[in-house]
Length: 181
Image (cartoon, rainbow, N blue to C red; front, side, top):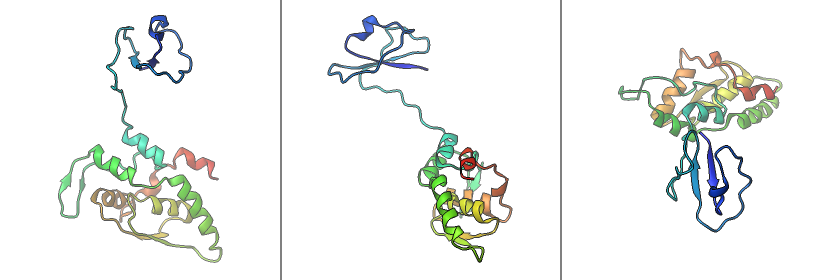
């Protein structure tokens, strides 16, 4: 879908096939014309906006996690209650998470200082496993020795990837990772 912002009487001069130049600082009312098969008369009311929410996959990629990192399906909380898969806990967990590219670079620099031994790490208030993931990308499997979290969904995500049968290493590294080598 395409959108055009119309002002200063431009609507009378504009066909949907025309390109609109950069808009200036206008003091009259603005209207949003929605494309995609609409006619010039299809204007939205003032102060109405079309906003598309990012998908959990897009949020996952923005934070630098591998695709599917928070897609764990049904999960159980600490009381054994089964929760169906939903987007709301994914959005919350990703919004409270870390951006992996920055932390990966920082962990590489910290780990480089331990030339004579293999460093290990523990993570308090870990979220969805961003620190252990970056740490193990740099230092290898088993170097993130423990983590803790209080939120139930992030605990389930971390357990899936780092528990006894964790699969963190099975995920392909995200696209940004190739720029770090």
